[in-house]
View (cartoon, rainbow, N blue to C red):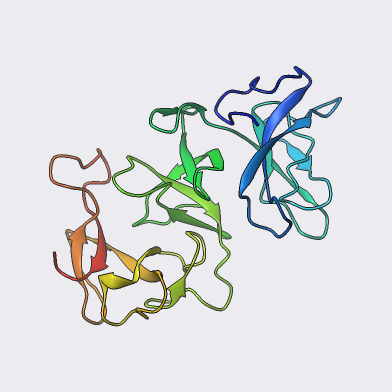
Amino acid sequence: ECDPYIPDSCCNPQEKCSAWAAGGGGSWNAVKCVTVDAEPDQPGEPCTAVGSGASGIDSCEQGAMCWSVDAKTLVGVCVALCTGSPDDPVCPEGTACGIFNDGVLNLCLPDCDPLIQDCPVDELCIPPRDPPAEHFVCVEDASGDMGKAFDPCEFVNVCDKGLACLDSDNSAMCDGRVLGCCLPFCDLAFPVCPGDTTCVPWYAMGMRPLGLEDVGVCSKAP
């Protein structure tokens, strides 16, 4: 119906392209055109969602969505959507494009260091998409009681701080019946890993971004 990377891609100029949970539930899986609030909130400002955090209807301006919405109050914060394209996304300085839910979500989120986990206390520092993305981004921690090393995972933000949700075939200690498994990040300069895993580089040789050269992940040896 619309292109989330193009703010004015809806036919009606008073509408915006918004991610939502088609069929109900809390997982964004589609985009649609919705009417922009008469007095819209800007990125960085508090916002309000209508119905649920995944309804696609909120008080943010065109090119932004209400993120980290509290399930009870329906209050969150506006974040800008990435512009450009999925292959070459553009975000304001200090943020990086997080592309999730099969490309339905494209959010400009604060960048971070996965070895330091320098996000707010209730957020995780995770890869914004499959490697070798040049940034990591802060997202809401949805791990709950699960999310320890070798626990199964289905979404990128359900592992504890310092862990990534990767393919379960990366360790024999993962449950091979599920696709994802929580595995720790590790420092290539001081490699420490649990179980049958070893610290392998996150980035291929020659592709390591400045400041993230020592980022590794605990996995079976290549």
